Length: 285
Image (cartoon, rainbow, N blue to C red):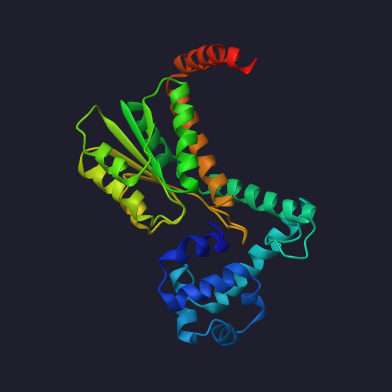
């Protein structure tokens, strides 16, 4: 997991003094390399002790190890972005449209690569098992996460699975308490702290459903409410209108789940896709 993705994932769970440091470093990671610990503390309007606590919160013993590791990471990414025609990860007012699009593409490619690189395949396999064995699949997310839930539901419906995207928090919680056939509940939240989505998984688990979380935050309420938690690695652009890069990373995990489910019943899946494609072909004329 990259340092910048770690900071992005941890930002929403940090106390205010550490969250200010996270915000400054997220917006300009090179500040850690350019400034001393005292200068960074002053920039963030906090104390040196808080900077040290911030370092420890993201897995480093102190400021010096963080500086060294971040310098290495930024150096590698500079070469990677440059090779792709993007000369930095953040979009600025001075960028041309082509430069802005190149930077966004680089961030999205990086999110896919890092999400797959850190993917726990044992957890993925267990989540696929839960979906495959369920007779009822409930999916819920708010905002951009709802669109991701709809994407997985669409894919599962096309291969004959009983998948439902729930429209509002009351409907979502109500659906989880019904004693129907074996159920899996899947919640989507980038920060992992959306209260409605957390309650959805908690209620589902309390009523015997298997639960799956798709989030970027490992130590989040949503992750703790899930039997199987799948994590994205994301660094959002400042232009995050309801999420851009995080949505792409979540969709990557959606496709991983779908491919896994599809492979469990390969012949049945191929036949279902063939028949649904034929049935909808007339609507495309």
